[in-house]
Length: 197
Image (cartoon, rainbow, N blue to C red; front, side, top):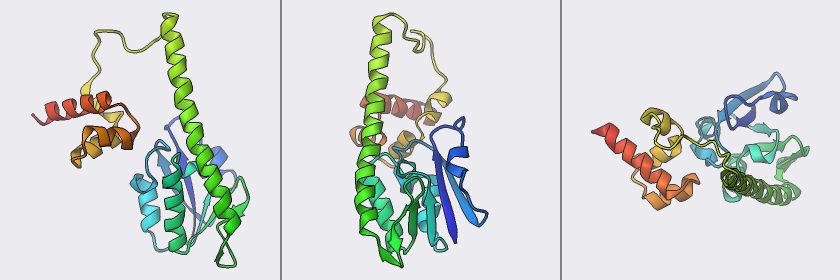
């Protein structure tokens, strides 16, 4: 079976760019989540990795698989072990040629996986700088001091943190795995505990 994996970060983002070359015989797997979430923890990523029917997988670009070098390479390795040929559409390269591993593919995807991770770090750094500049100018529009955010709304912003905490992960481990501050994890834990009571 031929499949196509699509990932967007938020529901308001468009799918068209990733679907522009979709073929009628492709089964779609679409995730709406951050690229920092490990591939095997995404709803459709999990289904895809556990499928025994997929033999050919197309993704528009390497960063659709993730923004973490190790996770991307582990995902590609798992797919390779299952005999799945992966095509990176914007590069026009495939992981296998005549059923054998394509060494050029391995080299290029390793480099681009690092680039995807660096892009995420750069984006987060720019965001932090932008907030610092806005704060310095008195224009930062964070939540008003003293106002309270609904617990359910707050918890819905951090589904991976909630999941890790329920699995018994420590604050620091959860913080690293979910790419959020320890204080955020602590606040999520507090809200979870309040909800249980």
